[in-house]
Image 1 (cartoon, rainbow, N blue to C red):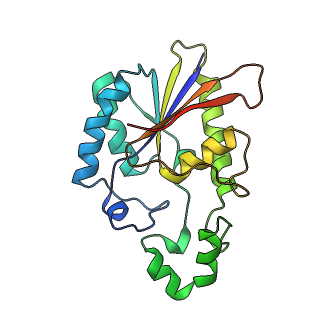
Image 2 (cartoon, rainbow, N blue to C red):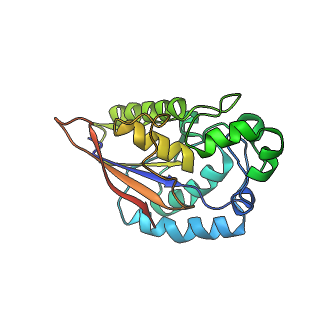
Length: 203
């Protein structure tokens, strides 16, 4: 039975460094991000993962490959754990967005949904939680108890909040992970919610 979920954020990209929104757009790791993934993978391998599921975006896949190489486990892609979509905001920094969309940006900075073509936190959290719950059920009974999900800052934080029974569109008690850091959830049977957050932003 899967009793532990490790959610690992990808390494740094140039857009992370430039503080630009990436969202669902596909950007690769930069040199620093590749080194982060190589450094973090051995520590994750020590946790004894049995399965790996990855976002199909290249920055997550290339991060996952470092863990694949150490464990011999082949990651399976699932688009539901890809990053939250920011629509027309993607590729831009906050100063650029403020020039043409100041009201929506203010809503976003205040923890509210900005509307337009930006995916809501709730929708993002629901699809990530759905993927995690489905993989947990699918892999249970196959041997092994630890599943690693290689994903993204927004996808992970929104997914974790959803799994813990919080609507991330209404409250955001959890910040995004740093690049190549991870969170750990463990199953708690006969309790609500069914998952417990035991560590966060670990590296």
